[in-house]
Length: 430
Ligand SMILES: Nc1ncnc2c1ncn2[C@@H]1O[C@H](COP(=O)(O)OP(=O)(O)OP(=O)(O)O)[C@@H](O)[C@H]1O
Image 1 (cartoon, rainbow, N blue to C red):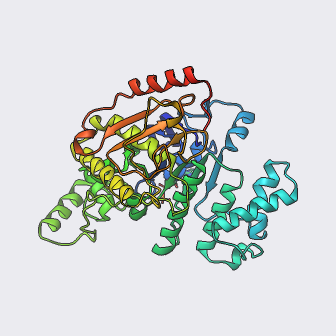
Image 2 (image 1 turned 90 degrees about the vertical axis):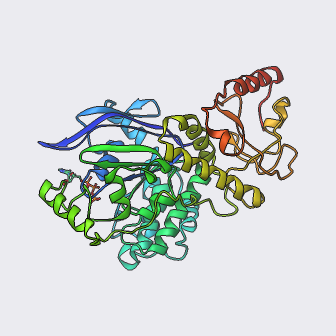
Image 3 (image 1 turned 180 degrees about the vertical axis):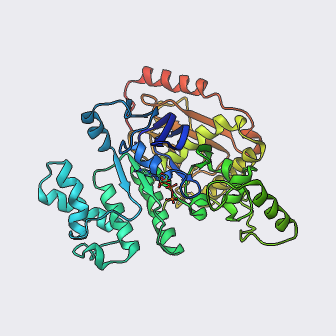
């Protein structure tokens, strides 16, 4: 499972130029996150700070229990092995074939034999759709192919955290959709924590579980995607709509006279070039392709979001309820193909086998079942999020429908019941 990344009070400057200050956020384990923000607000600097390439003046970045801003070079080297990074330009070595580029981290960081290296490289080459192109040089392929090669290279060490700096830059909208889908499929397959830095509003609307935004040297917000997409904050609305009228200027800030002149133009009906799309109409999140495993992170995300729901603005709460209802509706319509959250009505908590038997997913995390405990497809009258008792901290059983989500969920009773059962019954293995 992916690793949680906890950033606390982070401040970064270059000389006298402060880039951002007091940034705090948590990238939940295995969830897909996006970081937005106007050009120059320090998104790439943030990524580089997460991986310890840049050193902040203040704050901490806790990864797998280690504060990478304080640890030794040796510890940092080890922590970096958890990361796969897709840099903006793919950062491929121009004189090496794609094959050698993708093999590079394996040869550098592992003692694997060449036949094992070949097996892994070719598996990743297939995954990103580059089969047949592995002998080409980066200069002989398109920008989109270079991106995919960069992604393949980011994946060869089975990263638990994937950082993607503008995976869409230089790509057409269709190729962008393909690479976004690939990220979701990879997330379903390896449950890695993903952070995508992007300006692409389509990606922001459809891919991440959580979105954050940097502006004026601060993290404006970070939370479930519905929170940002329904935000009434002028800077967020302006950024999403791509309009020149608003607090974001060509340079960092607008002075008052420019802002007043723009307000007058806006009042006169002059276009600021933005889209009139209603971002509070939440587009369903992209799901893994058929045949991919269930995204375990989506299950955890739902449990997290339900628990924090009462702390969110009213319109975000409403949007989240709608998203959940829509996911459940789709899951109920096609339980055999759906890899979304799937609702179960009949998980039998009194039977210790019920928690495990017939449920898909690996042995190491959250399960959600498109079938009931006997392997039969189930429609959704309730949502059960069940984790293995010996590892698990979360179990949620909630009736579906709007009313179900108005209260924070107290999972302790169910947790205790499961844990008690597991103690009484011995083995917890699926
Ligand atoms: N190594 C460095 N030394 C000095 N200044 C730097 C360094 N790296 C980045 N900066 C400065 O930090 C600021 C933020 O840069 P960064 O590339 O992180 O922005 P960004 O939000 O990713 O922008 P874009 O969306 O345009 O890619 C810029 O003013 C940049 O010049």
